[in-house]
Image (cartoon, rainbow, N blue to C red):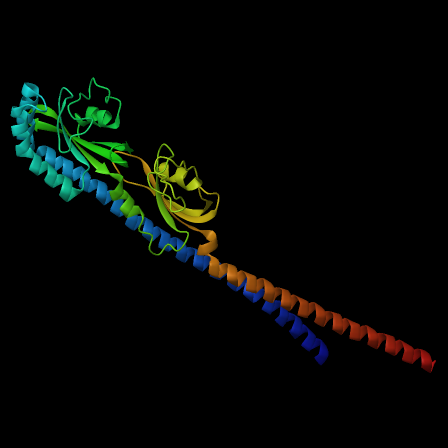
Amino acid sequence: MSTKKVFITIGIAFSIFLMTLPLVSYKFLKNAVEVEVFNHLVTVRELLKSQIEGYFADRFGDIDVLARNPVTGQGFSRLSKAFHASGLDGPQYTKMADLYQPLMEHYLTDYGYVNIYFVDKDGDVFFSAIREEFTGTNLLTGRYKQFSIGQVFARGFDGIAFEDYTWHEEMQEFTSYFAAPVYDGQMLLGVLIIEIPFSHLDAIMTHRAGLGETGEMYLVGDDGFMRSNSRFSEKPTILQKEVDTEATREALDGIVGQKIIEDYRGVPALSAYTALDLKFVNWALIVEIEEKEALAAIHTVEKRVIILGSLITCITFLYIYLVNKKKNQQIIADSLSKGSKT
């Protein structure tokens, strides 16, 4: 093989190497970045999952302890008797309520509850830390039987129960309820109910450090509606925004996963999802970031690889063209030379 052909072969091989190397490097780099982003999303997801489960576990424990407190049982007996004897505004009831009001207000202040209700086993709401529309009504026979507070009361006889968030008109906020039975020895006195604000959960869900401009965390109930607010909406989305994506469907089915999907806005996103381990509700927790932002560095490299590959391809074809052109010119010149000699 002539020296010229050797150099041509080496040149072609080197060109192929230069075209192939960026493509191979890009593939490995893209996989590495995807893995890194997903690892971060999974870390955020697990930390957030622990926080949410811890928050509800604390509320679960709070009402369990409060319902078992002898002071609470004593208050149920005394306040119930006074209520049935003189009503909410009678002197006997007012005197008794003044004894327990400071303790219940302490719980409202220290624990951030919206309200605390004492309900006897017949359904009468005979005390609340803050008097409102439910106070003095009956949750078994009255108009509030089908409301959230009536539903949680009915289930509270069997143990600690939870009722999902609903709109509280007077508070102008979404609230939820925990309920627990209150006993005096073996005798059932009634049900203790605490009302908690959505703002507690919202404060947990709005910590988006490390999730960039498009990353967000949100909750979806088994009815398909959000249990949190979207960062992309100026209006509240809790119980207003319906979400049906591959991530939410799998999470509500108990699957823990991570993949690139179309989010609820139809935007490609890297998503890490799981169901929450809560005894009383089936909620999905989703942590996402738009693919465009998450893989921004990769897209930059991709553009450069395309430009570099195109440039190398053009140079290679130009080189082959010039070599062939020179070779053809040489063949023509040799033919003309042979013709003139003959």
